[in-house]
Image 1 (tube, each protein chain N blue to C red):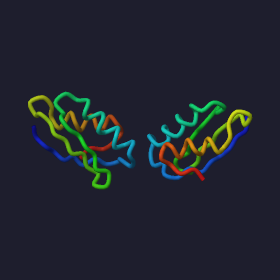
Image 2: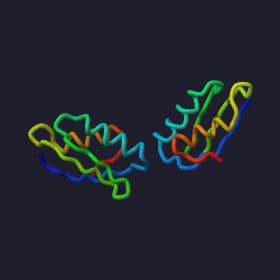
Image 3: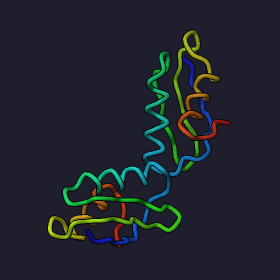
Image 4: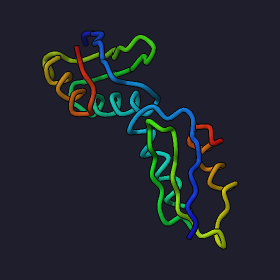
Length: 68
Length: 68
């Protein structure tokens, strides 16, 4: 498992936090996903044999946010 | 049906808008509910024989927002 911290812009409330975490956790290869609203970050633990950061960021964008 | 406009504080995004509208629309006697995020308002059409503003405001508060 590898840990990554992704900056996510546009999250404003607990609903946004839940939407991002739920969508990312639903991906195969993601073991953990936690948003820090104040820091505008998503911290994830992923199995890089199964999933890459590109797919994670696409999933965040699909929820209506900007992944940097 | 009577129309009312309630000021709601704490709504920051489309998820908040949906949460308030869905919870209020689920109440018996509510025919319409629409949030204007920019104006911080919820416009409702209710049958006052079935439901009062107090119950509407309690439902908004249960969703984590402040109804004035």
